[in-house]
Length: 160
Image (cartoon, rainbow, N blue to C red; front, side, top):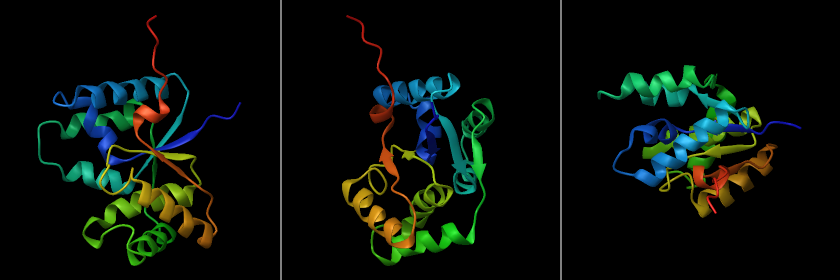
């Protein structure tokens, strides 16, 4: 059976430490456990690393350590991803001021991953973004990529 490939967007590295958002924290920790068990093959990108490294808080190193701990493969920046991200921005799907969000979707699309996992509900996990990036991906020759929150991809333990 083929293991699904997933792209972990920046927010996924923040929520394991988000004591003020217990459900998102629990879902994200469950996602990392499922990665550890081999349910998913995880990827992220240089764009995520850049965002994590720019953080100037006490949890910066802890977030970065998650990449190594869970053997997350880092997708390098590329002209192909940049071109696709700029197509999303030009189409008005992703605002120019949040262009990195377009780079996340583009990096995962160019790599041919199965889906993106994010807790960015403003620009990524959003119906408009999902539908319109799918159209551009199709037009540009890339396969459909699912965009989900952790709750949509993890298995909940049923205690009944």
